[in-house]
Image (cartoon, rainbow, N blue to C red; front, side, top):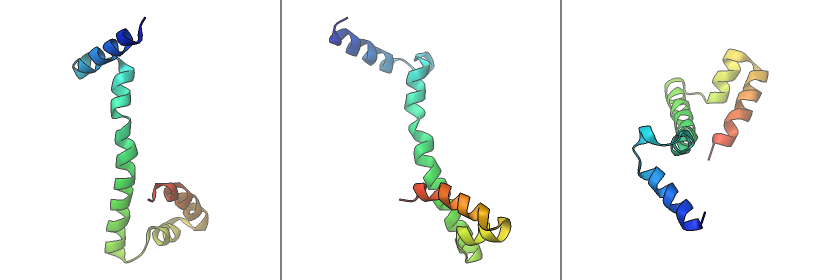
Length: 82
């Protein structure tokens, strides 16, 4: 196959309605959604909790679950912070 035919086939696949596209193409199209949405939801949740309680997320986790859980939750959420 020549490179033009591969590009033409890819373009044709993208022009198909979503229900008729190959599964890998559909998965790649929506893969960005959780990557963008998760930090936004986490930030919104932390802001609301802080506004209501006057405490930060780490303080609230430490009160409810202890120091060890706080450490692991902060290790998970730190890469999400921008």
